[in-house]
Length: 477
Image 1: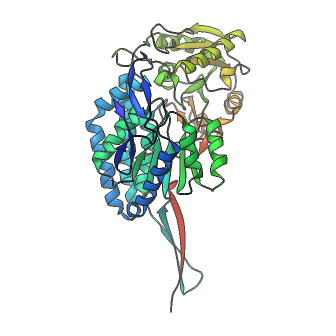
Image 2: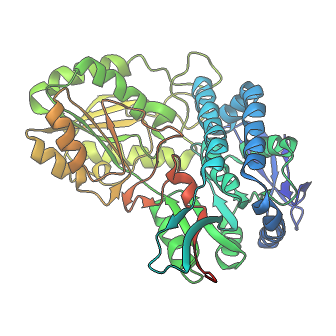
């Protein structure tokens, strides 16, 4: 497969006519090559988006909604093809890839509907001859920087609300998964968006393209999914032009199991939270807190489920754990495991690189984990589950909140009063209460503290792409 840039309604080579390769992390197989975009290409794409913006913004909400629904229909028709590309390039099992396609597509459907619900308001005046109103208008050109762990889901979660609001977009996909973006934009081309409304600039190095996003005054909104470190840099640099920003950054989710919980259900559900996408999700369980009185029983149940997992190529129907994205990710995960063991953690299962040509790590469970271990403060992004015992509700809430991140958290209990208390005390933007998979298009996704700014999804998701304009009219009475 060969991918080009998509700018102003046309596929084209990069300005320097160079390409970079994409490989399968499970096999090392060469999958294809993609145009290596430059700062000049980013500037060209931004100019095209800026030129297309006035006409796109003037289209009726129904016109924009119809095009987004056409996206939804075409993606539904190509789920199997898109899922295969996703599994080959990113590594996740095929059934998970199909789930991501459905998840990504749900944003096109949801925001097709939200496009028709961008409401203003009238305000009571303090003068007889004045009428006050508020209207919502699209921000303008949106630069979207996506990530590799959900390469279609994250792009859809950004561009669907932007397009629904009346903005035009320029997308920079992750260098590890550019073919996924190319496949999506081939569908967007078939949908028939006007030239310049949607643009794709792939690149093997983010610096040049990112610099253009940050310094070009035609870009009025920057939306990013990635590490907290990079997010902080983008926030600082975007402040020079006071660009609007949305940041979905790192997480370090606690998963708390209280003694009154359904232990069998908790031990089963944590598999979905921790090991989905080989632990490479920003909201996956990173620290598993188990009440001491039920720790032994919970670990037995948990290990029974972990032993059922099968590591392998995502195209194999029996595979439940695919590879990590690259060798660097594998090295980091092993360092976290080794550090924990050197400081007294007990290895219950896994811990080694799995057989195969790719960057596979065995599903790993650690017990007797303590707060001074790296794994309790840094995001591991791998199939490694550290278990930490606790004695009281107050203790575990303090430990769960004692990180700079605040994206997602989970807890399991059958006590109604505790459900309310703990939900209100956990300092996180997303709470999974007896629910390991809380992400849906119709709900706001985002974090607090150093996990980001703004929300994606829900009715809140479209507001980040709109400006509020207040109009005061004086009448001749």
